[in-house]
Figure 1 (cartoon, helix red, strand yellow):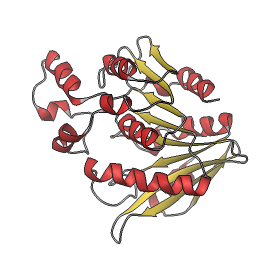
Figure 2: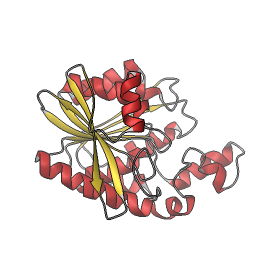
Figure 3: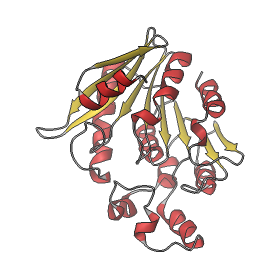
Figure 4: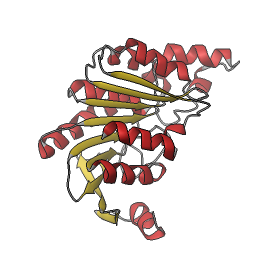
Length: 254
């Protein structure tokens, strides 16, 4: 993004942000109630063949993914929605698992009503949990999980092996969401057992934030007859976003 576009996102509530590669990037707001509005972004190609939803990682923002999403939208002719969680960007409120799942459901329902379909869902890092829930609840045809999270028990076990102790250490990658809710409510491993569509998991085997065995766990527990685990050799947590790996993902979505 150029500096003007960055300033538009940061300092204004303008709807239109930029057009690039024949893709229009715009910003919108979904009103949850009188005090909570959720910011979301739309990557809109000239002609739409598919509709997708992308969930960011917990400690990331739209600037981390914008180039990837322009490329994805352009090369697959996909209209892509990106939700800013509560407390992120211009979204109001405090991040919480107790509210985020319901927020996602409301916004996804609106997307489906507008577009009459939702072809695929992508989730990166902690966003993989939201992606699995959305894809399962809406029986989406395809689900793509990048450097995904499986369950808390596995993460505890991993950090203990790294000589790291305590809940605070466990949740270092997940700064904004409260640890107690996370521990009580979230298991991507269980959710993936209910998803029957196409499943692609891409994970680096040198990931130190959400270790590779989490992707293996999800693949093992998936009931899909059309599933694939793509291993990025020596790949770290952000490796799925590297251009050669992202192009691989685009080819899968095509």
